Length: 390
Image (cartoon, rainbow, N blue to C red; front, side, top):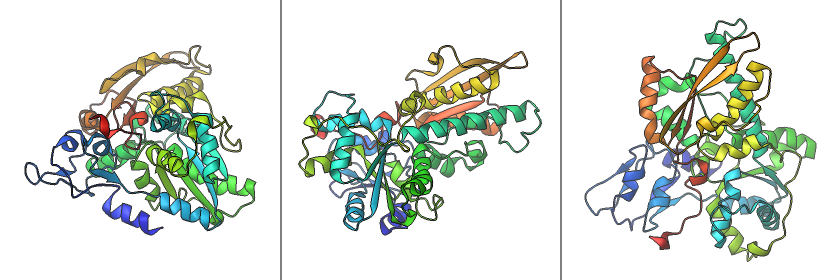
């Protein structure tokens, strides 16, 4: 464990500078009530014991007085020390990075991003889509096991209780740990795609590349500041070493590319490395609200019914409301239909009502997706911002 990770675990990822104007904008968007106000116009303070590290206060502050801990220096040091520095990037990064170079909002700069990462010195460039697919399979099959247990199907006695919550958003996971520990058995046991990819990088990939895990430095480019806290958690050591050594945000990647004088806009398109870098469209929709739910339901439908969905788009779970509900009919192989009831929580501030129903035993749902940031990872606290527009 590095010193910076120890500091993150004790002091959190997000802090407010001494030049805080006390405008209260950060207080309004904090989903965890972690920001203390000591009087009108005075500096606000973040309580790390309550903070979920989501960075929504950071991207909202009109005076740019809130910052996140940077791990860029550690990555550069690993490169200078001759480590095999391997990088993964989340799908939401490719549609956010271009904004850091004045490209139209939502531009897909995937190919240029791969080229830039190699120019920065990363030896292998992988796409987190691969691990997102693994998460889909894990969460989907876990949901099936929980449903079968509830239906009394033998062989599923060890499955967890219903409803099942998603577990890929570190902001939501920390919120649940701090506020609803009794809900933890309901959270999927699957790691997030980032942490799955990190584990694979230092086990399977290390073997295939014939490089000891101790010589690999694993980096993740994420749209999310909470991922810095997640990678610091001591339980993620599948190879005996940290699964992910450092997380850089989309914003930090853009700044580093500029620092190196790389002409990003004119870079040629490059491809991702294939060993653990390819994935399906299921992983690509992870970055928006409802995406995890939709992808996992596709898996559940195929396994329970024995048939693939004729139309892979499950429109019922899409939208931008804070709380959405849907019922997805899944035909069973032995006849009959299972009405799978789901909920999509678009922002942690909307989760309390749902959580309390589960605790009280009044929840009608089988599966619940929670994303801390409104809109999903594409609006994460690590995405590019322009304070000059305020």
